[in-house]
Length: 257
Image (tube, rainbow, N blue to C red; front, side):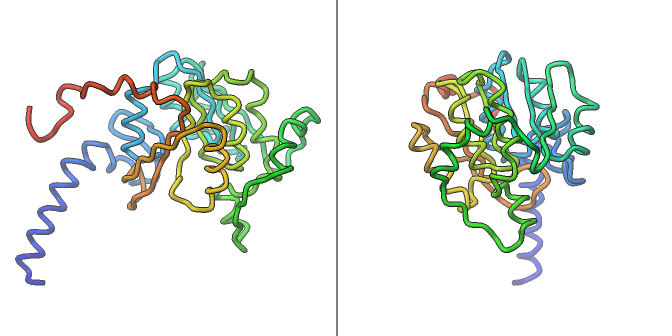
């Protein structure tokens, strides 16, 4: 490739970075903390984030598997947020900055739980979805593929009434078990946000959600921190949740007034 062609490509890359990545606040997150110019943001793809900004109501009740900057963002956009975290040190750091409407709960690996909680997940373990495990246990933990070890974590949601959450976010440990429970505790017109849904290892969990009546809407794209494309999916039973998307916001288009 000729040097002049390299220069042209570099110019185009710079324009993309300026018109898209800078606008989304991507450069603010390059230190490893998901945020934009306004503050913390969920560590999900930008297309999914923008969709959620449009459809989540201020009075929403949110349950989150895995806490972080996303917890703070949700707390500023919803009425109540309950976040369960397996890492006690990280949970304490997030809780230090938590507003009054954010509750951070720690449930560590292999933590004992009540017989009632164990009974609640017995049907899941009687017919568990296929979850291909790696030979690397660290990989399995990091990707939320281990379920029996995190029953106390996943069942934290059972402390609340079924069908009582507008949004349940699956982005932490025991993702298949968490999603299975989320289907029971999200409202009929609510949303399950499943991050990293491009990972084929979660297919068994996706099939369970489909069998429970959920439809999958994918949002592929870049997002905070990362330098690659991934997918965040919204699982909904009722497409009416998207009814508020009829009009495009004024000034949202960069190609003209």
